[in-house]
Image (cartoon, rainbow, N blue to C red; front, side, top):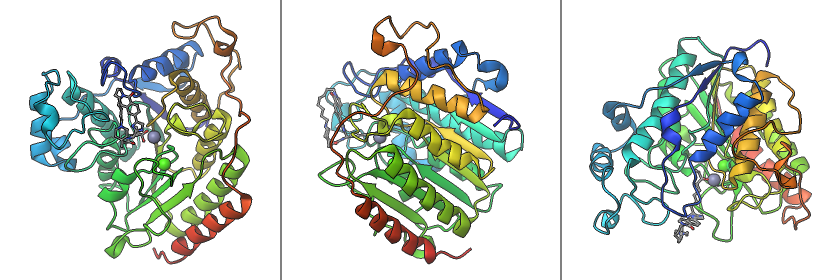
Length: 370
Ligand code: ZL4
Ligand code: CA
Ligand code: ZN
């Protein structure tokens, strides 16, 4: 979007942490994205900002103080069996690692900085690819997420905006963000995700739609494996158009988890990164002040390709499909291109089901009042 003021938040120190030796969440993917964005010469088109880590006080606005105190205390230690017994960090998914507090504070600090910049009208679109930790709960870590930067950013936006819409296209249900705002009609949360057959976290049926004043303001779009660009974009645009019409938000937060792109280690949708980027492009057509966050994504080169393409989408730039020279991608044929094509795989979504889900979502949206 050539006429928009875009800010890109990047904390160089925050992406070299390792959750554990073989953990699927690899923070380094944010550095890979950064290098591609730089080598595609996108820096002159936006303001590059190095954010400050969140303060303890900021973290405690979102999280139980005792949980934050605990994160800070365990942070300098290597997981030693004793700390893993503490119920707020769940061993395999959310291991205790050296620097876990600083890692979390850095991510939250960047997302809060995005919100502040939007609040002051200094940017129209703010990007934090390290953010998007949608599973973190008030009292505990969950699903690779320790601190909920999204809830922190939305809370900040709510000081200047009457209604905030949250859209989550990570392959997993955005349960943490949904829970934070489950009983308010000032935040509409919309998550598209794989659902059923024990897929994590297991929540996110269309029936789960909010409580009290928040009833009908939590929107869930459950899907099955193998969904294609055509089906996804059809449903996504229809849901977004109806939601925008009903809710009329003053600000938008996008969670762009790249594990919904084909070939992901944990996800099994069949979306190309162009399809994924088109979802963002459509969201930007509403011309709202927007925060764009990362999220999941476990085939790291695909994550870097996807978020690079999406940075260009935000800037209104066309990129050459041939990746520029960089230190992560090699000379193998599969390392040459930016675009990730769809594959031949079984698709458990029928058009009939997609339309049925759409109608269920329309029913919920039809009950909202502003
Ligand atoms: C791993 O290889 O479904 C963690 C997690 C660590 C390294 C070595 C330990 C091996 C896959 C996942 C044992 C791992 C057992 N290592 C993990 C119910 C589960 C309990 C934990 O994108 N085991 C839990 C969480 C999901 C579960 C997905 C998505 C985050 C986001 C936003 C979070 N948890 C079963 C799994 C590995 C691992 C390999 C793993 N964990 C895959 N799916 C999960 O939405 C950032
Ligand atoms: Ca989602
Ligand atoms: Zn995910």
